[in-house]
Length: 268
Image 1: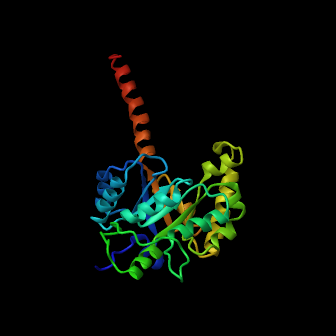
Image 2: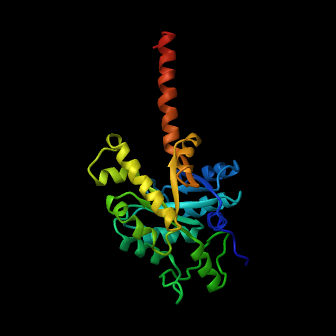
Image 3: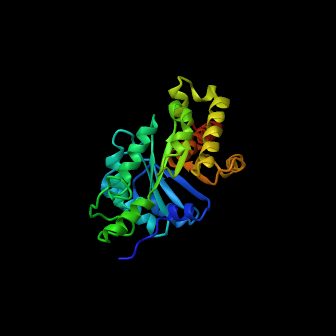
């Protein structure tokens, strides 16, 4: 069976930009609807925030692959090894790791995802599962290569990881990083909205360090209008929008407007 393409890895190898968005719902309909637009390189399922089953993971990947869209899954810290491996087996092409506090934790996560070969030094074996495009029974060394191609991304969201960002970005196997302002501020005992200048400075520090070490910074933005600031800093990889935030904003805005319409018409 021929190897199937890891979309995000291909873009990284070719030095091209990428655009994703975040899904909370594991219903594969949303993955397919997103992919059918042809406007996104991959979707990020924020499994850290949502309930899901392993059946959901496979179906999300199948729906994405129908339109050659890649896939990333964000995993909780404590159970990261188990769920990251299951996500890869289901067909996810990238993993976003959350809440790491030390470089040793990052090294451990990388080791969990690299193949168990003499040259790779990882611990990921050869379970027969779906993988990308149902590559369930390719050769062992082809399997090792598809594991090498899995994109490993890390949230930089604790003050300890910001302080050690150069060491973290020099760890082999770290492909991407993303600064997380909410958790970063919380780790310092701050409310995010009270320390905007401080966390923006920390974010710029992380972007600069990543680029210096050949790691790609990925930034989360609300709209396309927000991209220019980061492009000028050298960023080429973006996550635009968030399924829940978009829906919640619509409910808040239109719900309030509808209540006013009814009040103006003296219906309520």
